[in-house]
Amino acid sequence: MRKSNTIKSLCLAVAFVFTGFAANAQLTHLEQSMFLNFNAAMGAFNDDLDPVLASGDQIPLTRYNVGKNAGLGVGIGYRISYRFDVGFGEVSPYIHADFMWNRTKGDIRDKFLAADGTAPTYFNLPIFIGVNYRYQLNDIFTPFAEFGIGPDFFFITKESGTGTVVSTTTDSQTGLPVDNKISKDFKYKYKTTSNVAWQIGAGCFFGEHVSASLHYSGYGKHAIKTTDKDVSVQDVFLSDEKKNDTKVQNRSIGLLSLRIGFHF
Image 1: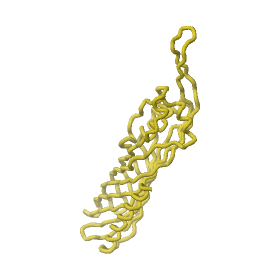
Image 2: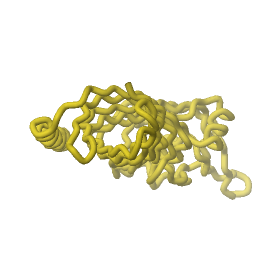
Image 3: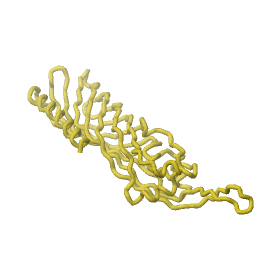
Image 4: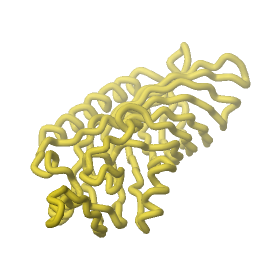
């Protein structure tokens, strides 16, 4: 409830700022934009995996490793904005939504493939309310900078396959410990999470209809949780020290994006 109220308060504050621009500046026109995003994972989203499983392997990832190890990704975006001439450039309040897609890196996907399984895939859906400032140098180049804030929704697809559990027993004849490897099927499903996100970026318009820019988006810390029915499955693969660990696993999700825009 507190997180939801924070998001609403931030959006309301930005809306008041936009109202001030509208009251004191001349409306130029409505602008719609489509974007192609090419992104690289930042923060914990790009962290290496921890070997916390009883088998010593990296699959299944479970909530201790999922949300890490994201590779290069792509995305699409849509924006609607108004352009206001403020005398020393143009200010454009906007509403912007992205749909970002990142896979786990190739070495991890190969392990899932070898286990006849499916590696988890990561999706972020941020919705920003923000403002863009641009200043036209000439007919070709118009540099700009912008900032936005709003909610982000983080989705993790299920992971599945066959994992190995190591069970240690004592040999009845020698009395020595013996490791027995047992194959177990697994399937984890994860809950969708949300948090306050922000983005900042700078770039340039080339003419009126095409732009290129570099953006950093911070999607906040997302708490990784499995669905309730998968808790018992988790106990099979985790090491003894992790089975009863109820500590929340948080991931700081960030993306550095090259954004190509088409404006009309």
